[in-house]
Image (tube, rainbow, N blue to C red; front, top):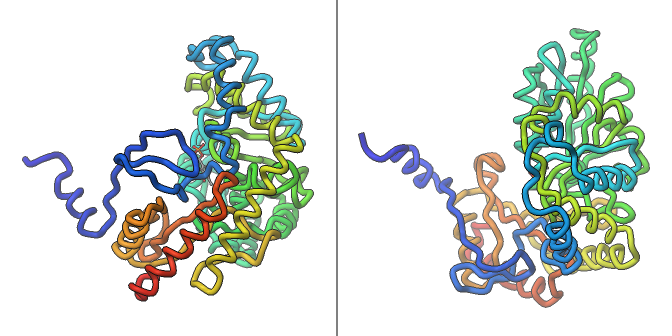
Length: 398
Ligand SMILES: *Cc1c(COP(=O)(O)O)cnc(C)c1O
């Protein structure tokens, strides 16, 4: 027998679907260093530039000084440390819900929560473009799964209609994202809420890419649309706009009580490091200040700069602040072409990742550009110039 998985790996390479890690020797920020080379970073979800901000660094350091590094055990076993309690109170207050529960990642929040909401007798209905964590949680639940085409309300309605007719007594859970991670588009939340009420379903909304970005103080799409009370399960992550690490669920006290008794990724996993909870609290506090709101406004100026700089191209851009996000996909299609495009930009000093299957569908490979409040306007303009230069040279690629 040859090397383990040799043929499978070769097959991935042949399809331009092989992935490898790139070592970065610097903190996350608008510029990073890869193999000794400085690149302007358009790949990160650190939308407000908080990941390496002194506010968070100091909070985390103070957290370590007071609580050490490790959490020792699951919170149900060795006791729940004060930073986690404080963070959950702050999250609930910030989101306007009765309670909150933290997980060690957004992924853990999804795979722990969804199987606690639905079981074999139930129905889970997902948007086609939902994040892998939501799909994995739905599969793990053992519920009957139904998928509707991206943001397609008519198809969602017919699934709900089917579920209510065929399974009148089962729980029906609708799962979607407020801002889609690889598209940058928003969900039609008001209409979703209308449907969930009509069909007596629960709604789980993953706000991973909306937190810190939309709504006053970055509270997300449910808050922006004044629908907080209508979204039963509000999921999010501390790992993106908040610049830290970890996931959360916000909702009613009884929901949170149920999750802490049933969500296996919470029960059977060591609590996140307390210092990270201290840092996440500092991030939430910052967002609620005038300086935080200014930082968020700066992000929107940068988004606007990118939109204007790339205008006229084939980029999928929402029509503005009311529908936009910090994520801008440039759809290339072919996997190899996407990699070549990404490589060409890297040679010019820009880190823009090529996103391929299975993150997106086959032949829908793309460059995923994310801007942050920490970018300079000129960096964004230079990226747009490099993109249009590359397009002029290789018109088939984008
Ligand atoms: C990143 C992401 C997650 C997972 O969050 P982590 O904290 O990175 O594990 C969940 N849902 C969506 C939509 C995401 O983009």
